[in-house]
Amino acid sequence: MIDLRRVPDLWRRYDVVVRDLPFGLLLAIASLLPALHGKGTQVGDLPARPFDALAFVVIALECLPLAVRRRWPAVCLALVSLGFVLDQLHAYHVFASNAMPFALISAGAHLERHRRVTAALLSMAYVPLAVALSRLGAAERVEGYVVFYLILTLAWGIGAWLRSTRAAEAERRHHVAEATRAAERNRIARELHDVVMHHVTAMVVQAEAARYLTAAPDRIDATLSAVSDTGRRAITDLRHMLDLLKADHDTDVSMPSAGELRTLVEQTCQAGQPVEFTEEGSPAESVGSAEFVTYRVVQEALTNALKYAHGSPTVVRVRYGEKEISVEVSTDGPGSRAASPGGSGRGLTGLRERVDALGGEFSADRQAGGGFVVRARIPAGSPS
Image (tube, helix red, strand yellow):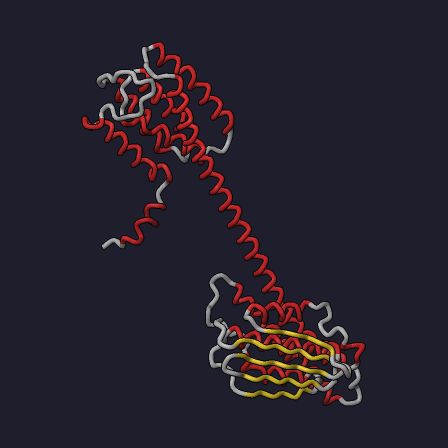
């Protein structure tokens, strides 16, 4: 059986001419019904005359061009207008003459070039039609011709309004797409900053320390091994992030979570930073936005500690509550180095945006005795 919910989608796959043709055919068939003879649009009130061979040509001119009213609106309008003029001059008054407003609406909505010229030509052509009808004995007064012209103008105006509405919607979607792309670029930049800066900072610190260990070859070997391990972890994290950026990425690609904080602290200690780590409660089993942001907050704070207060004691406290996760990372160090713990500030700015997006609170301040402290309150239970 055909799923009726798919019918609109299947119909939209057809060419626009195929989709517009049925309306014109229905209008033509209706014009051939005896009950609708003389029920068309009348300008001038000439007495209706019976159908002849030309009447069928008129019906075809007024109905069939509606199939191209969106593909070639100017062609449609010209042919329908010609059929309409012949219909009025020969007083057939076929039901198909009601196609004229539809042709005008379509032209107003879909005509892209020479819009003013087209409107001016139609307006000028209306005057000779009114004069010809008067000479044929039409009883219509001038006011009647003016009212009918205003009705045609209204039809054009409706089409123009539809066109402007469509253009405004396209512009809105363009702005939304641009904003989405900008937000995605910012997100990627934050992820790159968090992944690269932490590992590269640790590698630089470890490499600098190795320069002063020439008298202890065993320690040099351990330090260089730590540099190598840090580089491998950086490559692994970058691969994970690149997998997430792929359009067909596997949704099971692992993301860092609060449960991996102990590993992060151990890596920082291997880089020569003394870190005291305290956890209260248990992180959620599934990785959500709150757990992911918690990991990034601690990672960025430890990166800043390595960069600006290397070797100074650092304390990491994380408390998992039912409604929120609290994070505090404090580092002692020289006031001059800790005065700007975030360097360019990009990392801290990114963290503040992440925490704010979840409805939490974030702060990064200098301590009175030197050093700095990073605090964050992250609502728990945020979906991934």
